[in-house]
Amino acid sequence: MTSSFDFAPLFPAGLPAPSARWTGLAKYSFVGGNNDSEQVPLDELIEATNTVLRREGRSLATYGLAHGPQGYLPLREFLVTKLKRDAGFTCTVDDLLIVSGSLQALDLVNATLLTRGDTVIFEQDSYQGSLTRLARLGVNVVGVPLDKDGMRMDLLAATLADLKSRGIRPKYVYTIPTVQNPTGSIMPESRRAELVRLATEYGVPIFEDDCYADLVWSGQRPPAIYAMSPNGGVIHIGSFSKSIAPALRVGFIVAPWDVMSRMLALKTDAGSGALEQMVLAAYCKPHFASHVPALTKALRTKLDTLMEALNEQFGTAAEFEEPKGGIFLWVKLPDQVDALKLYQAALAAGVSINPGPEWSTNKGHSSSRLRLCFASPTHQQIREGVAVLAEVCRKEFGVPARSANVEKRA
Image (tube, rainbow, N blue to C red; front, side, top):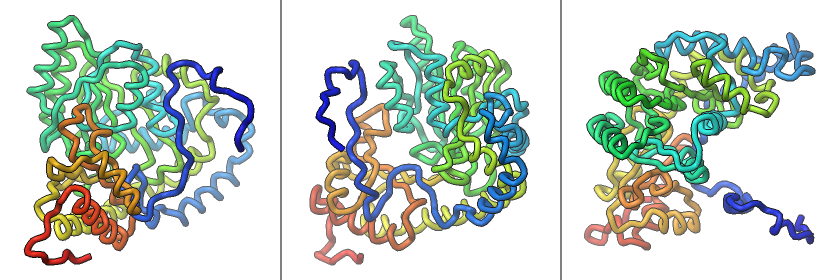
């Protein structure tokens, strides 16, 4: 519906650019944090829904199910157990806040700590959703380069010292240490300890985003940074989006009460979706521990298919480090490839990709990089989509070059 009333003069300054209309997913979609639809535990979720609604569905008549503003108690109790087992730290239900996905967690932490002109420290390649939020808030983001083990501590130390010399105290150091997005690296325990040491020395809190931490190929992960902090200077967030299903929109925050109480005052939505919390609690207690290994096994096979397809279609023109887990592959193409232009050309050919500059604090460093989500497409779609992408790259940028006029196999 198009309105004849002119709303434009009423829009306040600073609104983000208007959204385009949704036109559906591309034929070959390698974007977003979507997961493998075949691995959604549908039968068990249906069973959990029926069980919990029959047992306590009438509590939906009360905001928050009469469990208070921090979320459904059985789900928080499950998380207390899970975080101790998997992330290595002890917390109570009062340390946990259930939120509408980790994006709401980002918004609450930022609203609690940041104001225009503040400075934060990020990994150089990082989550687009975090970066765009900070740009909108007018916050300065200082990027620290990564290597195969995540954020480099020598460069973080230099960054902190430089900022201090200029009288700037960063509001936080944001890190995705366990299956980093987009690189897929895992920060070793020794480097986590150094991060905690530096943060303590400079009086800067750590904002730990653990959204992908369940999806580690080996099933083994280092303890969360939250578990290693001696002074409580860490805010930890996580999500069920990658382990169960992103459309459920359920995440969580673990934080000290002096911060938690401020975030609660800002969470004015009368509570995140109660039915999703009820179903997750009923599902997770008996099934979560067995579901995740099956999911990661399926994701790992899709990663293998993607890496094989890239090697076949691009050869040495596509460079990448094999991720330690997750749903993304961070790919470097030759320098002449402009990832933003490639994004447009590929989309016209039916392939959607995430161009690297949107996932980086250093646009030059990431100009020829792309993030490919391998979880959502089928194995066949991965192979076909990569072949189409290679053809677009060849047409637009001359890479990958054909050798001896031999046609690449599709």
